[in-house]
Length: 464
Image (cartoon, one colour):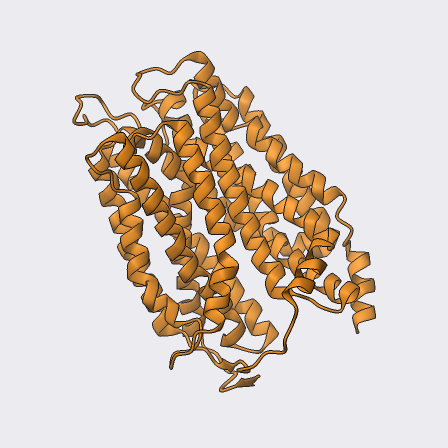
């Protein structure tokens, strides 16, 4: 492995961060707003929308390693991974817009259209994000520089989430209180017209494409990887992975963490539209934007806490904390000033907790890779990190499925002015104790996770 030039610039780091800023914008929209778009705007039955999100996200999860193989074998004058940012930027934006477009057609046609467009969206998302992540390995050989690039990536990802939620906040402020085509007063984004949804997503999609193109222009692949790799048995790598008990436990913790976020994030729009109504001091998008800022604050505490009490304890404590605070929301009043203050306070507290725990899983995956070297003599680092990405998508898929299935079971009906009491109770549960169960399941997995700070010190000493 050779390097053309090890020196990197601030411009390159910013350029690399712009890539995840773009990805994060669409990730947040699909996580928070796609369920209510499919059920209330597009017109899918909640049960059908739930199955759609589950099937397409599972497809997305298993497509990651396939795209990794394709990117590894790409050869261009721009490098192996970087050109995918240029090639897929415009398809990424176009398919994103089509995913939030509602055709004037029969229910059966729209059902098929939703599957086709969402599968296409997951394909282009994978096609641009897997190479983007792999770029970190060829931009510099310096381990410290890689950490700096990673920090820029996380910082700009939060900026992207902030921008996306801010734009949806402006969207909500624009449409709430106006009268839609059916003559009803819009009380939430679910009542906005299909074309209004398409327009706001178009604005975000164009911005995402521009950011990816700038990321391509501002970065370089400096490390020249060898053309021929040492032959390795995929069967042996998979065998070692499946026997890696810390990997299984950390995988469970990651899925629990994503279950919490996807269920609660997707439920927020339903909660604001059906429980809080229009006479609220804060819209759903602003509420979620406050959460993004709180997560940025939480990240600042992650490293100091991990250095003091260890990664496992930090991650475990964050999951217990967000579960408890989330469950408390069930007991908050919904029609008083005190209830709104309590909701905002809980959002800030929960998102700080998420920010503390979020960086831990990636650092702990590196420990799992070191454990694999010590245990089996083979790290399979790429496979281990690819599987963690798959876990994120599995968690998001299952979370969206649970959200819409609970709404279907509770007889959610977008066409009624006031939901039935049992439906309102289900929506409140989706914002409180149901996601808390996901976080607790993740904490349970971490309780048995064996790679403590002491254990990792022993492994590192043996590896040295």
